[in-house]
Length: 314
Ligand SMILES: [Zn+2]
Image (cartoon, rainbow, N blue to C red; front, side):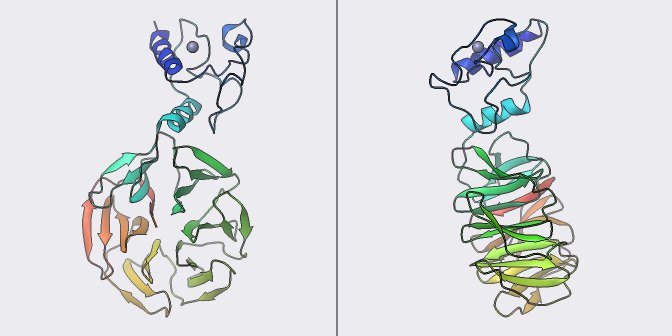
């Protein structure tokens, strides 16, 4: 009987705290019948799910014996928000379309939740939250596991970074500053084509138009630290230096003087890079490396294929 699996999953769902999604009027799935109590009676709305009936949900009140109801994307959101915690890790990545926590010593990786983070290239961490742009949605991952949408319309976001409790994003040619509640202001325009960005100690560093820009995170004041940076692939910053992969080289730039040296070549194809605890972590050809301030690279894991973003806890 196709519905058997769904019925068992449904009854477990009732047991672990999930109400019927059509509880306000169960005729939605049963064809008749009325309210089971609506949103009263201690019902708690789960962020990211509808307050009304959820089409094809495994938690609809009734199911025909001839059909099955595998989890919908909204069902997964509900399950993940209620039962997936937010493990304290050192790094977070989006790997194979899932958000993962990573131990920086062992590079062991585990899923934070089962939400779909497909196409997420941008990730930042500040003030105890993870921020990302998922298919144009600017989201914040909270310590209770909930994913809160702070805004939509972020399609085409190019780069992201964070410092001093703010997230910086370049999208639609604007340099945006967003606080942890999603309040966003423009720090300036003319930024289309940004290729890489990192932030540290109240300044944001961006490669755009071939220039290495330094922007004051409070005032937006910007000046160029140098040119010739076209084709930058990734950037991270820690302990007074900015690290950039460009032209196959791993560059180290003094954040005050702009003085730049190469720490090594052969780095073409870095898909994600961040900093944690004074070191740089880069994903190159499916491998996760730790790179020290003098350029010594240690291979930590070969299990990072399909990694689109990474962010260190800073
Ligand atoms: Zn039920």
